[in-house]
Image (cartoon, rainbow, N blue to C red; front, top):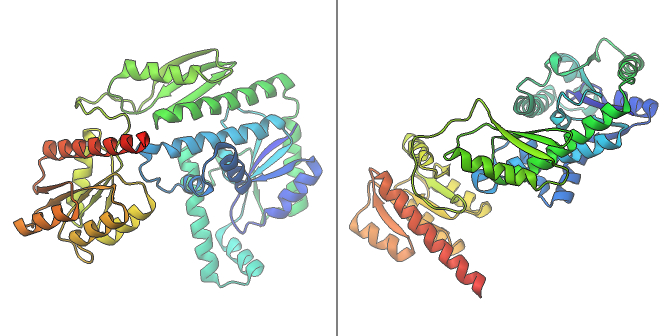
Length: 409
């Protein structure tokens, strides 16, 4: 039962080699796109969201939605299900999610030097050297970001692979034969071991899907139904959080026992505030003073308020048009579209967003205009952080009242 992970650099002439391997080993080829499509369909997630995760792009309000963690775990689940069936070749980068403990998977890198890749691209696509070079840079960037996230290593790091095929030095037939020889060397792994490794990986993925509800920094390991969860993040109340983790994992079919351990990134904050939110707010900070708004975001984060940032009115309007923002903290004096115009347009298009004006240049007339346009509050810089967080809490309470009234209707 052959399972291979084949990673290749763009324009490394890997496709022909993978197809010949598929025919000789009687294995189906599974691409990243297929993994993404199947994951989206099975777990009711937008393909575009999964694509963002695979390309290591930021998910807005992830502290609220935990989409990154859910997508990652669901991708693992899809890969694990294919491994359990056997006789497959993962061609792409998502297969790097397969843990080292799954020893019956052969890992192969098909690559060549950059100059050869450029020439291969020019020949295949009849594009300019500049266009091909740009394509290579973009593809390699996503590859390196992904493998660094998953394995902490660069995409072409030899230590990630059992076999490295330099296509400028080894032709297709020799490449295929070399890989098959290596596959045969691990073919004596017992069926029981293969079954256990596959089962453990699939259960690990299922548990991590459940744990995604609790956000980032949680990593599961399975051993015959016994689960160990590493808590690798900041936690305010450790014992309470450990119990939550155990409860989430225990509800997964196939789990026999659950224990937790602390990872190297765990620490207990000394700042505890009594803000009682069932879920974090979706906060957008809008200010052209980059140092100020970034510092404000960090200060809010210390108080368990996570936020996104826009540096001008145009960015703010574009962001709110595509993301479910709840509270906006808005400066008035900005180049381009100023705060008053942003407030006006937001209240026209997204009236449920509560806007808190935070400005150092406003006047009584500005305050009056803002409140008439529907601002929730008007505050002056320098920001009193306790007043700001208290105002945010009040805005969130208003949002919840509206939600409850809509639900009652």
